[in-house]
Amino acid sequence: LIGLVTALACGPLSWSWHDGTVEVDVTRLWWPGIAAATLGHVILYRTATRGRLRAHERVHVLQCDLLGPLVLVAYPIASLVARLRGGDPYRDNAFERWARGE
Image (cartoon, rainbow, N blue to C red):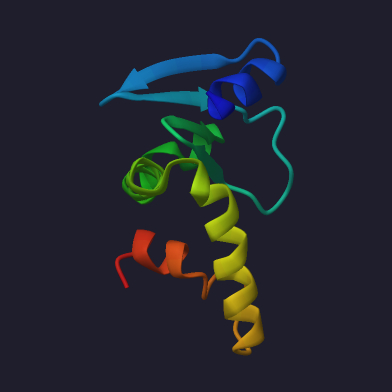
């Protein structure tokens, strides 16, 4: 629901359905440095990144399935833990490492 509300708030966009997930093209709205984001079963992509990041973002969908709304708290905590360990809050985040297959 959060993902759909976020996508709708972005205005008229290009949508598609792929394996139980809504994929939304947010190319014209996206901020620099962010290639994609997953909110439940909604994946927000820039067109150029859709193909190469689909598998990665599908892992985030699985994470959302497993944790439900707790992922909204667990993900930032994982970033904080990575930072406190001297790592990068994104690259060393346990959720991102899992999505990269590490």
